[in-house]
Image 1 (cartoon, rainbow, N blue to C red):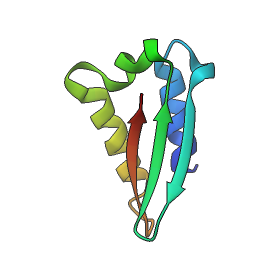
Image 2: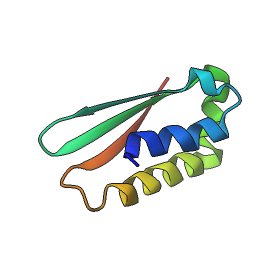
Image 3: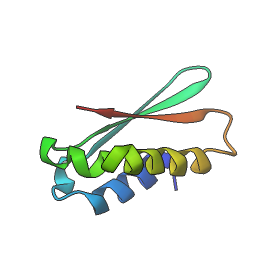
Image 4: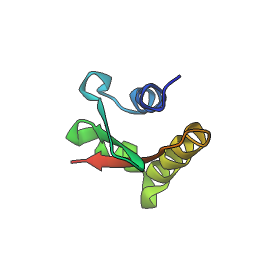
Length: 78
């Protein structure tokens, strides 16, 4: 499973409006940037208390790309 698909699956399970979840991927020479956009009402669910959920998502993404040459970075877009 690709990291983008994995992130989409996890986030769709967390939010109340899964149809509004958008996951886009861009890459440069060294890094892969995955941009996550959710409905404004679900933004708190994705970030979590003190950013714990966002940190956990970034950890899962780091583990999923550990064997790849390009490391992934997660940006949560407002």
